[in-house]
Image (tube, rainbow over all chains, first blue to last red):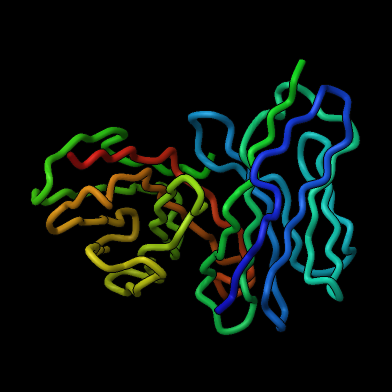
Length: 115
Length: 117
């Protein structure tokens, strides 16, 4: 079965530290990839997405992600985190063929940023 | 904001009672989805719809049914609620710019927190 793995359950950083959250998926075909963020008590918001083209994708709020096809990975990065980045981050995959757009989500990574 | 509302936003009910959650959208999107979010599980797809009266099961559909009689409304029903259905339920929509839902982005509603006692 297709799956998405986010290896870090909880990451704690100080402000200005660099962030990298891992995401690996198990699907051999073409995929569309997403990162969503959920601030405390809120709904999921799209951070960035990859469908095709440049594997380095830039999103909102200074986030970026790199798609490495050979590693089945789509890691999220930010060079300098802020306290306001405290949230839960979800990676999601959508197989682009034969799909009704159903997303497969990772279990999420909680990010706590200390001021 | 993708024009998605969910009602109710919070509900407490008792085991064995039927519950219906409503997702309403204002932008005529074809695809709609229901997910549940539980700690340690991320979001899991319950049911989805690809048009009026066209629905299909997701990963965790047991104990749930859905209906879509109008483009704008997608209802999720728990026929007989159980404590294991205590969760936060999110509706999502996808507009289809590339011809299939797999080529577009899902946007989420504000969620419904359901507690089954």
